[in-house]
Length: 271
Image (cartoon, rainbow, N blue to C red; front, side, top):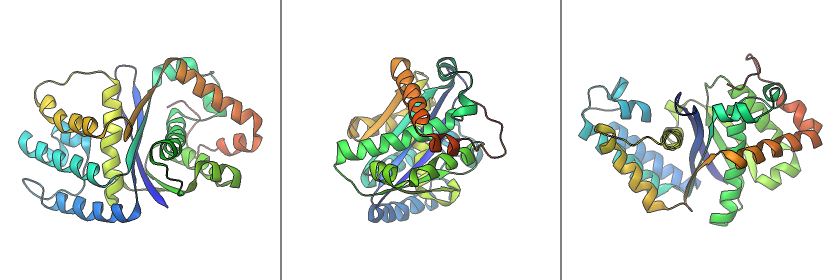
């Protein structure tokens, strides 16, 4: 079995990108990664950190508020090096939410759920395909997602549907867990990948401090190449094809449709 950790990142600008992204580990590599990640946090410049949060590091707020740019840069360089050293690979799927809402049928949330759920679904599909095509690995995959998103109940309901034998075998799905990001190193690392996905989707050119902090991220992607870390923004014809594929599958499998209709305490909405 391998383990995959996923987080989400959302930006309310330039089409409102929403990303679900993360990293894939072999269990032995993940244990080593966690030991080194915890040491990185404990030995962080200017004092220990309770956990890693990319938004805070980038903006210099919360636990990063009193840390200089060079100190934050040093921490980010360590984080990206650990990711490069210990992961099998990474996957990130991004939707422009404004475009999604304009392309999908108006009743999409009532029938198929939120954009977040669609992003989780796409991340699972992409991870299975990535493992087969790029790594030639066929072990079952256990997924971890950060808990606390307003539609995590809905996404969890959809994921439970993957337990059907034929689907489970096709996607090599072992199971899933929603957990607190502060408690799992893999989810903290996934925060970095999801953040990159939504940031890249805005096509912003960093300046000042942002340009300095962008260097380790750029080096990580260049060193790894597209075959190891896949950041995929689904837009245009590819977005329409995905929406049509989901709609077609639900129409041909009523049980999938029924499982999808439980958003928990939330109203059925795009976002």
